Image (cartoon, rainbow, N blue to C red; front, top):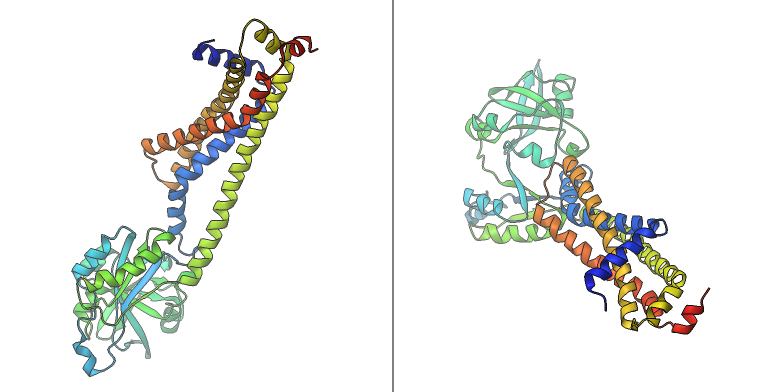
Length: 399
C-alpha cells in the first residue's frame, strides 16, 4: 500500500493534469469559500455601519427614556424625576449601548422678540453628544460642540421652521437671537427628514440652560443608541432595571420604534438568507462538479484501475486514491478561496474603517477548510467507491 504522502502527490498530479476539466469546479468552490468567509467575518462590521445610518434604518437603534410629568402636587414626593450621574454611568457600561445623550425641556415656552415680532417656542437643553447620537446634520451652519457645552456658552441651534418664523429665512448662522433675558448666537439650523419633528424647537447647551434660564433644568430625557438592532430589545428591558437599582424609577418610560425595527430586521433576515443560499448554491455546484469530474476520471482511467488491481492493488487502495484526489481538488480550491476571501476582507475593512483580528480570520478560514474536506469527501465518495468495485478483467478489456 502506498504511503499517504505518495497518495497526495499522485492525486495532486492527476488534478493538475486535468486542470482544464476542473477549472469550473475550482472557481465555484473558491468563490463560495471566499464569500462564506467574507460574509461571516465582516457581517458584524457591516451591520454596525448600517446601524450608524439612522436615517436609512428609520432610527431603529435609538431608545428614548424619560420621566413622565408630575400628575399633581401629591405626586412630587414620588422621587427624583431625572437621571442621576450614577444611573447614567451604569447605563453606559451596558454591553449593548454604544452612546448616550442627556436632554431637558424648558418648563413652559421661551419668548423671543426680533424686530418687533414676538415668537414663543420650546427650548431643549442638550449635551454635546446629541447631534451625532441621533445622526443629525445641520441644514445650514454648524452645531454647537461638546466644548461649547462644557464652557456654558450662549449658543443655540434653531429648527428650520422656527428660523423662518423668526428671521424669515432658514440660513441664519451668525445671527444673534434674544431668548428670554439673554442673547444667544445662532450657530446653525437643524433640518432634514430625521429632524422633521424638531423643526419648531430651539436647542441650547444643557449647562447654559441650567445656569441662565428660569425653571428646574434637570436631564429628564435620555437618548440611548444601541450597537445594533439585535441589542434594542435587551437594552430596552435593561433600562428600567438599571434605573431602579440606582434611583427611584416611578414614572419612567422607555420608547423605541418597534414597527420600524421589525421591518428592518425582516429585510435583514431576507438579505442574509439570500446571501447564504447563494453561497450554498455555489458550493453545491462545486460539489456536483467534483462528483461529475471524478466520475469522468474513473471512466477514462478504467484500464489503469484494472492494471493496478491486476498487480495487487486492493479495493481499499483504489478507493483511498480517488477519494484523496477529490479531497485535493476541494481543499486546493478552498485554499484559493481563503486567499481570495482575505483580499475581500482587506478591501471591505478599508471601506468600513475597521480591522479584523488575525485570529478571527484564521478561525473562520479553518472552518472553511474543514467544510471543504467534508464537501470533497461527500462528492468524491461514490466515484471512488465505483472505481474500487470494478472487476479486474472487465476493466483491463475496457476500450
